Amino acid sequence: MARDVQIRRTWRRGWMLLLGVWAGGFLWGCSPASGGTLEHPYSFEEHPFTSIVAEEPALPPLFAQDLCVVSDESIYDSTLVDCEAGILFSLSDKDVLYSKNAFEKLYPASTTKIMTALIAIKYGNLDDMVTVTEEAVITEAGATLCGIKPGDTLTMRQLLYGLMLPSGNDAGAAIAVHMAQSIDGFARLMNEEAARLGATGTHFMNPHGLHNENHYTTAYDLYLIFQEALKYPEFREVTKTSVYSAEYKDGAGNAVSKTWEGGNWYLTGKRDTPEGVSVFSGKTGTTQAAGCCLVMASQKEDTGQEYISVVMKAGSRNKLYDNMTNIISKIVN
Figure 1: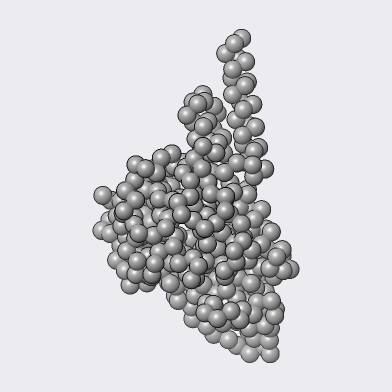
Figure 2 (figure 1 turned 30 degrees about the vertical axis):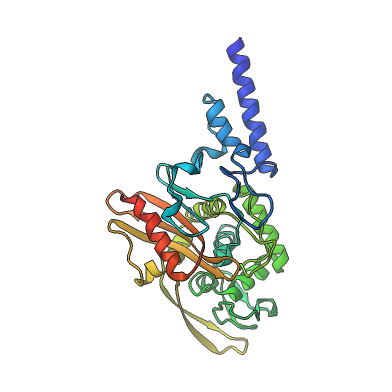
């Protein structure tokens, strides 16, 4: 009888914790933010599923059963990278191979577009014909564009390539308006999906990642979002592509041809991967406030095991890839 009571209490405690995560009352984390300028850093003590694993080994599997859990970042060499945050997680066996400041809130720049692509694929129709509106016009200096114009008509699938390869902020805005009638409406969809995934250190204000003080995430949350996106073959297909040609019509019915190139140096051949590692997906992002960022999926060639790695706030594009190479080298070393 006492054992039955204990089991019921354990189940009840686990489900209460799970409901707390869905309500946004808990934070996933392992260590306080180190030197960040954003408010409300994570703390390891607030991580509910770490407590479950440590204190209640008899609990049935819950939300965290398919996630990597960082328990102590002090065991990893923080000097391996000179970026603000970096992680390497195994998708195959859920091992944490490296973690530095995984739960520090940082600006994501265009890695935001991973969530935009996820929502487009998960909830949209890639065969929809989309007519570009004035809301898709991006005038911010230095913003990356795929070159679409109001009146252009192209498919959602084409917009995905324009979003992910040249990192078109205009493509992100066009997707947002098509799916939610406004940028603000689409940002609400993004935040709702982040909550569903347990990415409680994330808040989105737009579909492209142009700077906003209230638009932030963490390396760990990018892992959660990217892991979900990789479940969809369409996402893998788009993000493994280095060059894509789109044929569509402008507002006057004239044919338009665009060729878009990706920015991941591993996929374009500008940087070599460590021997035995191949890269098959990823998204870069850069703003002055965010620094240089990269979320990436790699495979260990001899076993087929898959890994997600994240670098946030590197000091330059070259340092970004130096840091990422150091991290993914741990796959084979």
